[in-house]
Structure formats: C-alpha cells, structure tokens
Image (tube, rainbow, N blue to C red; front, side):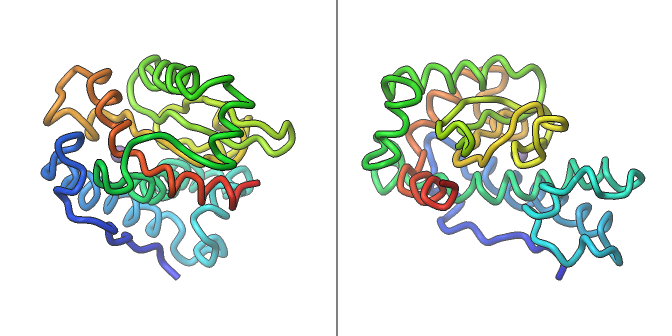
Length: 212
Ligand code: MN
C-alpha cells in the first residue's frame, strides 16, 4: 500500500496566531506531499512498500544502499510530519498549557520540572544548525524521557547509528525554515516560543502511553 498524505484534524487556520494558515497549507500539502510522493517512488515494487512508514525507518539499515538515502529523507519526512500535525491543536482548545497525569510525572522524573524540560527542548530546537527536528523521546531501556535533535528528516526510530539518538519520539518540533519563515523569517526562537501555545499535551500523552 503506498503511503498517503493524512488529512489534518483541524482547519489550516486552527493554529493561528502561532502558525499562520499559509504556512500550514504549503507545509502540510506541498512539503509533506513531496515526502509521500518521493517515499513511494523510492519504495515502489520492493518488499519495503508493504510496511508502515515507521517500520520502514526502523529497518533503514537493511534497505538496499541505492534506495537508503531517498528512503531516509522521504519516509523519515512522512513519519515526522504525520506525528507533528497530530501533536498540535488550537490554542485553548487542546493546544497549550501543561501535561497532566503519567506524562507530567515522567517529565518531572526526567527533567525535575516542566520548566526545565521546556528549556532543554528549546535549546535543542535552537541549537540545531540548519534544518532538522527537536524531539522528546521515550527511552524504554533507561525508562526515562530524553530531549535530542536530529538533522534533516532523521527520526530517533532510525536508531543511534543513523540518527544519533534512539528511542520512541512522542513529540517533535520541525525547525526547518519552511515551517516558520513566512511569519518569523530568521526568528526561530519566536517560532519555538509561540509553538508551545499549540502543543496538544493530550496527543503527546497518548503517544507516551503507546511508547511505554
Ligand atoms: Mn517540515
């Protein structure tokens, strides 16, 4: 089954003023659409085309070398963006605030306070040179949450040897300029600050429950 572009669970303007509707339209349709198209092209006719995109990137090291680069970038991009859209919601209607329950407890266990976690995550987002992602990752072996960043469309599911970090991502922030340049230009830190207002902690908690 070829991968398909998922429909957003909200209107293109739902994340304003943090993320403007035009950026959401270009990002969720054109950019994400290109990752889907190019991942399908790279995988067409191979046994990898039968797998979920997450399963493909978990087994990236086994993908034939001539396809590995395009699969890494495009199946990675598909996985990353699919999660990104679902972990955001309209400010005040599921978006923003703070986590509760088991996720809040795990953040406290791993980072001591929610504020410390935000600082660490923000630092990962701002220090990622060029294009990439900041992540909150559940590390099953160590039973803790960690913050990391990856370049390009790499995902922690690809494993440490490829992505430089490992575990199950439960929240990711796209820091490619295509995600913020129309509204924020060079001000990535303003984008990161505004993005906290649309993080859907309910969706992140659901990811956490699945991961652990
Ligand atoms: Mn993007």
